[in-house]
Image (cartoon, rainbow, N blue to C red; front, side):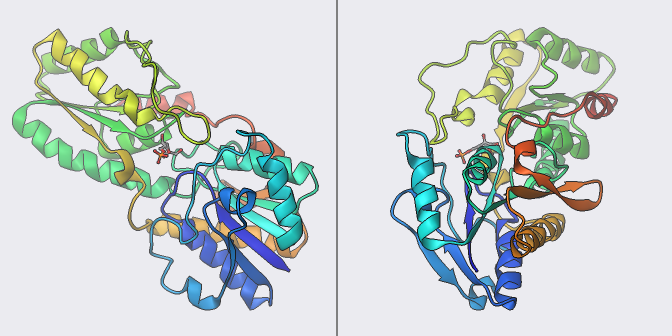
Length: 343
Ligand code: F6P
């Protein structure tokens, strides 16, 4: 079989571990592995597939990013991209493994519904793909947030400051919540459980009255500015997939400015940004990326398409792409309440 592999959307640490798992297992079994460059662009634009050899997989397990390259590519603007992908698959591939988040898996699902042999692999740093406890890249991001909070803690305590830390998280607050829990955040603000600016400032005032000389406030970049008393910016740049480029909304800066304006606190802001996506994957991301990658290969080898290996509990199971393709998995109340117990 000619098995294509692509990575689409934002990169994430652990992508190469998944590519290696799929590639090594497929070449071991005598299949041809075709790496598609730059996500859907490599199928919808000029065909950009190249045969991967065993040597391509050497040394990539520990590397961040994706050896295939990736892109935020909108197949629907202009229209017709999805059909061009179908045509390219007919011409060049027997099967395709598409590694990506909800946008990618929506396309995978559409392709499968239109007869293409597609298997997905869950990847998003935001960890909010429906139907899976784990997405490639999340664990590394949480570790980076945790380490950052540890470092900010010492300077916050020394200067008796409020540190506002903005994390990634487009629609949900998994990175903020779990990174904040691991790093001992004194307040976490995420889209699922919105707070007003008054509530944030009241909390800081209460902490200070209890004798806490500093506070670390973690905010997810996707929180609603209007709930905080701000206005959504017009003219914010959008990405290829049509979403707003969230970092440019400056929610961390906004929250910090409001605290500053209230008076009585010295405030600083840190935007963790793409540091959360860069560098070497954690051991956990390598292990689970390898497991979901291997399961995706097993599905392809068995001729099972329209599915995606997901993690539930401690197991990898196959879910239908339709199950993950629409919507986001949100941080549940019990997790946010656990975080709140330490505010
Ligand atoms: O979707 C994953 C993600 O990391 C979001 O958390 C973030 O808003 C976005 O990607 C950033 O995308 P880009 O790298 O295209 O700026």
